[in-house]
Image 1 (cartoon, rainbow, N blue to C red):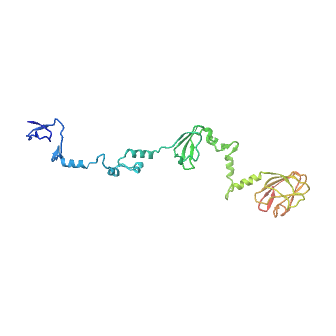
Image 2: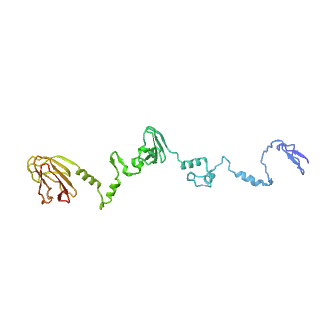
Image 3: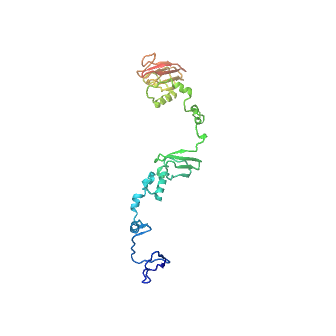
Length: 311
């Protein structure tokens, strides 16, 4: 079996020899081809024409890849949603997905004071942000970053920061100084016997209680007596210090159910206590006075809008 060397094809001589049956060709050097080379048939079973056509349409690195981007790459929305499982994720899309799933939080780890409501989303804070007050050794975590109403929770509370009730578990221990803040068990039991049939005006109750415990003094009785110009008393305690002449006068405020007035005569003479116009002090009729002796004390309760009774 003969062996023939492959020679450069653009040389006129030597020419390739006619292959003989069983011959093989050696390629001792690179082959340089000028012009078009037409190959037909198959090589190792592959269709040469089909392979050539595929190579001509293959996408090269420098070619336009818009088709690949639109059809095969995940969008930012799909990357951040984290549900797409059929498209390619680029490095950018991976980063966007990581940020969406675990956003970078703004923290303040070297603050000189506690955070306030305006340390909010406008400054870049978000729920989960940390704030460390290095001046007072306190740590806070943001639970709501809404503009101007941000909420920061102190995460370094100690037992000494908690009310006694939090330690004992007994609400009877909840006090501020010596003032009890909640009702005791016994006091709650007493309230159980009270039936409230209408809305309670706590402000009105406070005003009545405050007035009822106020001591109004000094009070000068009206000289010469009589109802019209008599010195009007107030709800609560009234200490008359001046009764210049016998039967100088004072009068009750206009009756309102629940009002309670206490009169103490510290003057030098007996005085007269009148009701307000059209009111009555039982058992007397309307506008009739009752006497109060020197050093005497009398307490009256208005039971309706026109009637006072001694208690």
